[in-house]
Image 1: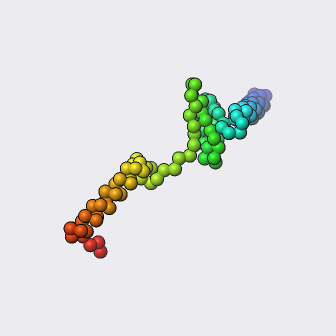
Image 2: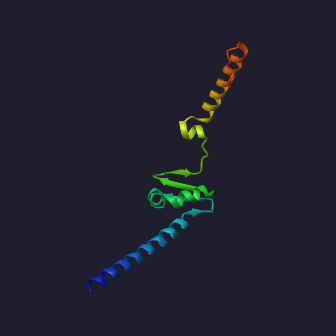
Image 3: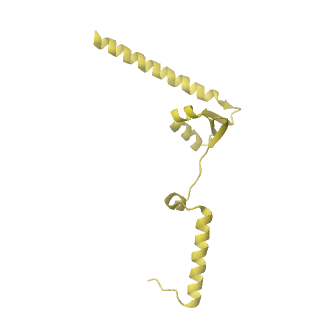
Length: 116
């Protein structure tokens, strides 16, 4: 008898979980205004983070409401230098210009070594 009660309570819990998931999905869809930006509370964003980030990566306009402010969630492309070394594009451009000018100077003065 206890086994059937436990099984039925597990089934009821699963059913409630499915119902909550459907309610959450419908609540998330209701927060879209004019089909332009989808707004999520910070709690909803935490709860559905993978779903929300996939929407943003697929071009969806997502905003997370924090207090009285909204934070946009969008894809940002990073260069290898930014990911690996934390260097910005302007920093890498400046460094490339510095290396190029040093190479020209060394070639002109005869200090450049031949690489074999």
